Amino acid sequence: DLASAAERGADGIGLFRTEFLFLDRESPPGEDEQYETYRAALETFPDRRVVVRTLDVGGDKPVAYLELPDEENPFLGERGIRRSLGPDADLFETQLRALLRAAGAEAGGQLSVMLPLVATVDEVREARETMESVAADLESEGVAYALPEFGVMIETPATAFLADAPVEHVDFFSIGTNDLVQYVMAAERGNDRVAALGDYRQ
Image (cartoon, rainbow, N blue to C red; front, side):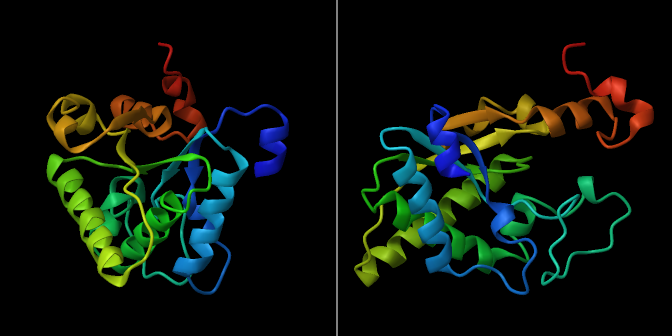
């Protein structure tokens, strides 16, 4: 898919959904497997930007080997950065190690890391501190790495209202219209009966 996109003139990757690395398998991908995947993406788009979203499971993306809660409305529950800073903290750190290693591999592309479903400045701050801690670990181990651009996907009304607040902690924002419209309009995007409300051009 990467080669096909490059052949068709893609100007980098605007959203690399990493959850697809974690689906349809019995155990999560290890650090080295993820590193090779991210590095391959950077090598495919030299001098181009590759925006990688950290793991976003829950909601419509269940994972067999994770203990996901049985929630009445999983889209408003424990998913995205909430899991990465909570029950999936180990997976988050492993993913960040792979990403920082890929960023430092001189693979050619420009790596950016983006957090999903952020709702508070504290989440941004804690995630950034985790990334810096991972960087310190790699440094102490003598492993080559680089700090990538660090950003947030604006997909909750809370983050939209607080957009100015986390500026000091991030390098960029990206608008996630699917979830943002769903939450603003109180209309589940998979429900045909309210699908018209999901037209963000209204």
